[in-house]
Image 1 (spheres, rainbow, N blue to C red):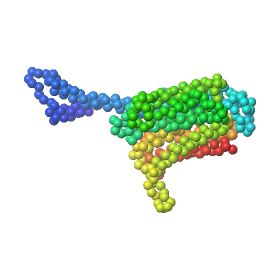
Image 2: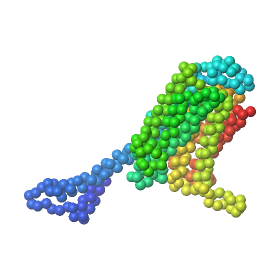
Image 3: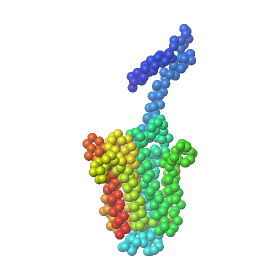
Image 4: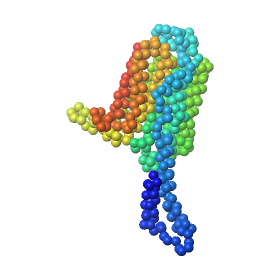
Length: 405
């Protein structure tokens, strides 16, 4: 390292001589006392200062965006173990199709005794937000991330430092979708009661732009206000709202309507979310498609550039973030809707769903490649992710159909 710095300093001295900045001082006058000498002193230190600044900048990028702090797939077990028995109808309160049709969230229609306990799915929702904004840096809104490469190139257009942001946005997709169902379905009794205020507040806090910071560019279409609440700060407020709601459930002061039709609505929304990301993965990975009318292959909507598709990793890790969030959320929903799973005999289907979700979330290549599906040197990781998500989505559709019977 010393040899490199010495070489840079020698080159800088040569450049100063070429530019005429190194002149001989008058006899008996120390060179450093002259204006030219002071300027040369600063000029000679400039390379070291520039190198130091670049090193600090690169170190900050690596530390903040180089890896995920909370990416362990074992997180659902810790969250479920820390949460009490799921809210809903007391075990053994009713059996058979008639009881399943009613499934009240409070003691009422069928005389079932309600268990006053927090929801595991709500606890999982709060834990996932905590992992994104408290246990880690919220990358999409960080000024260091949004600046890109000296405000010239966005990190999304490069193969570096954008995977964490894409992963967090994928997890946020799932959190936002489930927040809507909590507000509109699970937190109400058959849609006839008002949504809980904490669920309304949490859902609105999650809707703030993921790129919002204290000060935002007036040219940023995602942020209408130049000065606003940061995205991370708003999401932290959602955590507090969900914790208050869960405490209200434990105190029998709120409703968590764990009925089969509500479970169907949640699964349907998640399957549509997965349908959207698999469509994007599929299109991006198709460099050529077969045209039956022309009876030949033609250029497709995507590409087969392999490691040189610098946008492929963004899409891949966004999909992985969605599956990471679903990995915990589906396990928590299974606990909350344990009676529905038992009555409708969904255990085997749910096992397959959880397995396929975990398999998709575990895909983590060192470098994301978008090559041909039959490629040897450059594989197609987008197609592999799409296939894993397709299997999980097929299980969701099957679950929804069984619940509809």
